[in-house]
Length: 68
Image 1 (cartoon, rainbow, N blue to C red):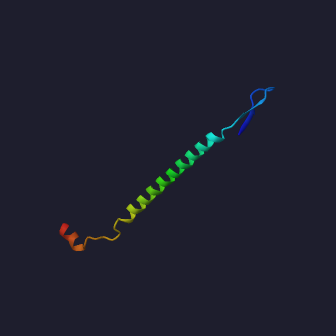
Image 2 (cartoon, rainbow, N blue to C red):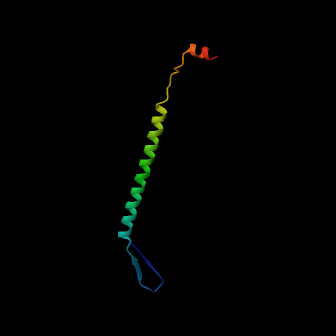
Image 3 (cartoon, helix red, strand yellow):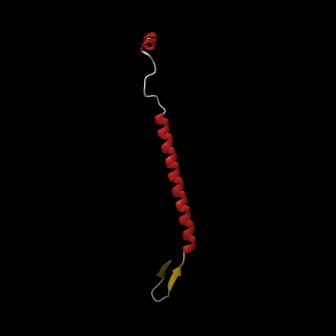
C-alpha cells in the first residue's frame, strides 16, 4: 500500500495496489519459470548434441591409402 501527499495542506491519498500486484507477481514468476525452463531445455539439447559425436576415428589406414 502506498500513501503520499498530493499537495501540502491536503489530506494524504492512499492507493491500494494489493490485488493488482498479486496478478502481476504471479505473471512475473510464471514468465521467469518459463524462461528458466527454456534455458534448461536448450542446455540439455546442446549437451546431447555434443555427446553424440564420435570421439574415435572410424576410418582405417588402408581406406585412407585407397582414397589417396
